[in-house]
Length: 539
Image (cartoon, rainbow, N blue to C red; front, top):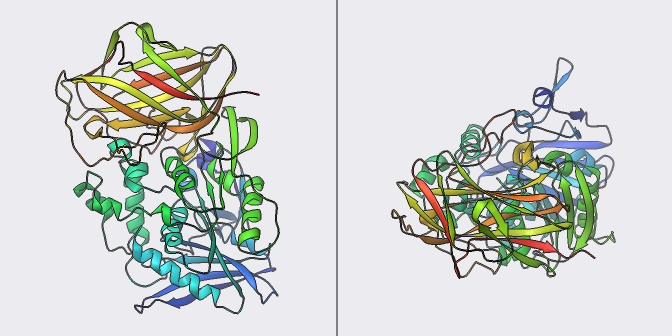
């Protein structure tokens, strides 16, 4: 409550050692003029490496001093800030602090995309047009007298998402990208994950986007016309295989309702020889503006944009936690999932048990609106679970109109649920989660891998009363230590298992729930229901 009223954000004024040029104009090939703010270290003419952020939110929407207090973006209150952070008064929403970077010898460009802020025209979010515009700005920046001709991109959320399509175009002057938590598939990762419509934060974001930018398309209206993942959604999706530029991506485990799944997809699927991942499960903004993340970013850009020697980064910085506020270990890894993973099958069994051997035939039935099926597995030894999980179910429904299943994996210790950081600064999150609209259960054979199934979301296969189907539900990745004696609890329900409350719930998340009926989970010889967990052998 206190952090919502007074977020622990310290703002400092831009010092004299940084200069700012406002509303620098760059004209596109079609005659539309975009405008940007340019920050540079004072007294340095160049050549400088440059970092670019591009977004529709308004580059000039920065903290203001009013009656002795700094005004902040209201999202710092909506998205609770559990840890302190410090930014300059030139830091716009989700953007790097330009003062910090200018003081380290970088030119920093904050660009209003087409239709946003002071830029002309009407924009198209997630579009090829937007990517082409940014590519033209990159070419312009590389030719300026203050530039060393090498440009990088940096930013969070939309400022991360806007990097992928640009990088896929391979503009010659773009030398590195750092998408810090940005989804890569709008349908799968944010708007309709698991085929289930998200109309909480998505609705807020779509409304605010139209308030701050002049846009061609009403995405809120259009998405209702495209409930399946068709060509309209595909047009938003970057071709990750075309990205060859060096990339440092933040793939946190604490943003599973927004960016975590898509960020890890980027790490797994881009073609970049120099690709790195920074994982964490801390607070989003305190991490991004914190010392360790900035050191990672600086080393990355010094090597690839400044073209200077710097500390070599690990391929994947893996952070393992055992609870919300405690990091057990940080170590270097090479891939995801980890090659040495010992995949373990936990079978659903009678009495709410999860066991390692196939049980006798059984089933459980629960009300999709009001109840959940719960299963528990107690660890006999310390176990690190680092990687994605997958739930395999045999399910039949009765009296259910378009049923959905929501899945959560929790950690319990000494009779109490152990909390973790989640999207929007929500400090009571589960270890992992997933969901599936059962009518969209068709698997995508091309995109699925042995331990990470993907669905097509292109073919409706409505459920029929009493007819059992097999489904696989991919769960989000995590890196969590379960101590000996602690338990893994699996919850399966017809609605999102967390409350929607701005003070102690997962606000403003909202997934459309099942509205009626019951679900029956059944298992028998050769047809188990099971949760696959990624156990990492301990040395």
